[in-house]
Image (cartoon, rainbow, N blue to C red; front, side, top):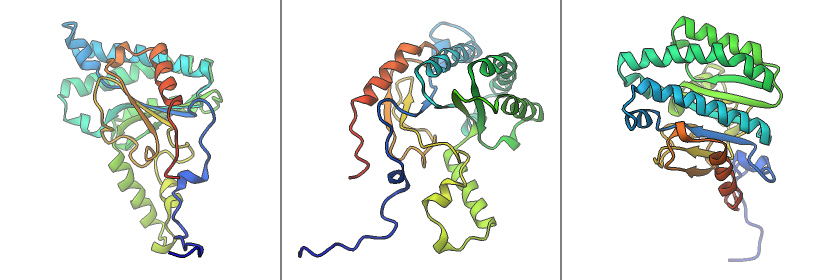
Length: 249
């Protein structure tokens, strides 16, 4: 081996290298909100009560995220795999979605939160689509925090849809790079998550932001989502702060 300069591929550095990691706390936190049903079962409650309690936890966490200055928060609310649940539970989740949007939109406006939804929204019932569109339109001016709700979302589906978009655009193979793909994802315009939190004791991503989380730090906790609060978010961020993010360097 000589001291001659090594020839490197022109596209060797992944997209993540183009944006320096934020100093201090994470700029984008993503949460897999797991454990609602187990929380309800442990209290001999209907599973819907677990989902209702989960919305209360989200309200608390969102408020705290605004207070501590996190600019981006993404939560996994309903996966495409969740369609496999019973008709009763799926209907309950859609009804709860409608109620939460109606109840929380004024509070989102007051807190300066802009909300967007990620997923195949066209597959949802018409009323759900209308409520989602209305909430997004009403809060579009929020500047304190961008809340992304992954609903009817699957990361592999997102990548399929991105490929379809790219193919439809007629781009040549050699013109496609990481930026091309990132710009075709549902999350276009949002930085990749710095921190992914999963509650409920499981330690997997479950088809959530697979492309975007390539260099995210992952923190898991046994705490079930309805019991997750401001102190738990602070603890996850403190754990994140102890990590050294090298990005392959």
